[in-house]
Length: 495
Image 1 (cartoon, rainbow, N blue to C red):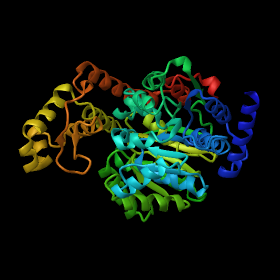
Image 2 (image 1 turned 180 degrees about the horizontal axis):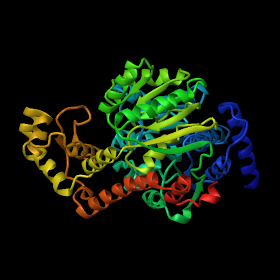
Image 3 (image 1 turned 135 degrees about the horizontal axis):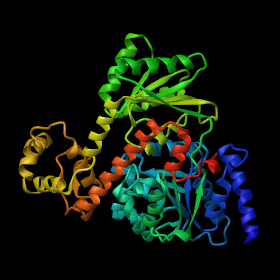
Image 4 (image 1 turned 120 degrees about the vertical axis):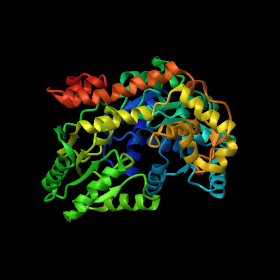
């Protein structure tokens, strides 16, 4: 066994060299790969840009090589299944792997029926070694049938904080991971994330249907010594604009690229207009842009030097631009986790970079309102459900604007309806919402959307996450020490 592990380690290094162009593994990557190849489970927490993907991509290639060299080639071909919530990134990730001649593919809702069926056939026939899917794909019986044709050797759960209801980007389908693992034969599992508090770490293991003793924790800490974290208290847009201009000027001579994050699209647009009047070139990226325009902006930014982009949090996942010298938050983010994940896009080349948070008390009010919108009560979920079920003809005839007016006629800017529909969709309660049609009820509401105590606990935790960011802003000591304490990591050890 020891000889086999040594041989696999040599092969892993060869794959790293030849396929990925790296001379040596970083940090705990090699130990994680060794454990994965031995058939044991892992929870991996690495800073953004730390190389998490290699921890399952290299084993996927190793499994394929071992199968090809085996004496029983007629056995089902091994497959590494990668669960990711990020449809927008899958194509980029797969394209990058295919450029390295790695047999990878994705299946998601961006494929039409013919493309999907062709991809299913290719998977069943053993064409790919890595397959990227969203957890929602497991709702499809034909997908389960395809997976039965393969030996699912490794299950990689990316963005694993989405498993936990207490994480900062909860996805209901991730709570079915124990069921998914059973459907594919309980394979070796590796869960990966950049941010997870101790509560979320425990929840990830539980939701996977594993015991704590079954899972090894690989925690590389969260410290990024090259990042300088600062907070600037401001009052109004003029002071914010001054801060933006100062940091752009600081890096304009050094080909320094940057991201300035906003919460509201209308605020982003207002600042873009101010910069245009001053003839300062910049990019803009937000969720209201057409998909082709978002991709164009992202590609142009990635190719540019000495450029910066005004963006909402829709921008950043998959941004592997190494020389981002500054990340500024012009409006307060909604949680410590989301803020830390976003500043992680700075300084991936290891060079000094600035992470600046602009704090205006008015922005706190906005985030508190967002938290209320994203946490409807059980009574509100019930009202929406009953309206869609019992007044379906009127919903079909008059559309969603009529639904909004009926639910809250005096508060048309109340976005709880958007959260309710999103949660109904994620739990499979409705159909048609994703296609922007009037939603149709398919089944009863899940218990968790009717459990007032559980919903109140979710609201309380979301408020705590926002409050933690306020505490960070007001902290008079070492802010990095505060961040480590929040994530349950001893500061001295991580440093």
